[in-house]
Length: 80
Image (cartoon, rainbow, N blue to C red):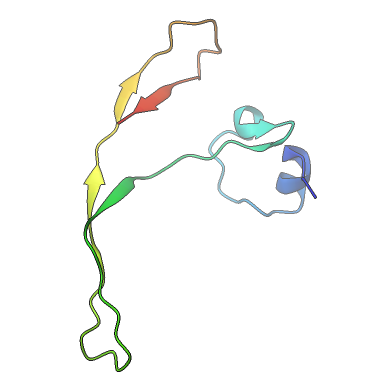
């Protein structure tokens, strides 16, 4: 079952939106990212957990580029 943006917001399934008028869409809600990370070193699992290690990550920086096509002033494209 797909929920509309209005249903998602009305049911409070997503909270703390910065701008409901912009982020609410007919087929959902546009979300913002705080950061994107990539795995740099794999984690390790074992049966006893004596050698368990969490995977290491590094943050990928954002580069903001304004689209050249016709779009709303709030639209932005994030590229890696």
